[in-house]
Length: 178
Image (cartoon, rainbow, N blue to C red; front, side, top):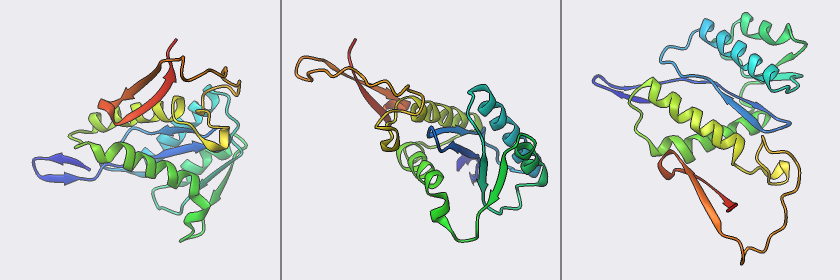
């Protein structure tokens, strides 16, 4: 939601997750989501997947009317199949539901959004943090973008730990100082 002179206005954005790597992609937000907007975000995500050489075999989505045929065609044209969720089956979407919960509780609840540009900035920084700094147990506690090379084992008593923060301290990650 964003604050305006007329009160609160809902803002919408799409979140895609690549399950194999746990990378997320967050679309720019809009106050008026349409079928054309949704299809454009699908094309943008498809470009992101191609740019980062991520295999796309299946796109799971719910049955919202905002997903037009052109949304599905973006993915089916690239040998990716569309799998529509059964109504009232949140466990089928557990990964993306967890991402959305993380965005809400760790990021968005700490801000009073005043414009679409403001929310887009927050979401870009949050996605960057999620992909480059947030550890995932399914990846051996490595961030999605990091290679699976094991970091060197260090004695924590002899190494200075540095806290990197984003978005005014709402998002934090820790690392050994160089």
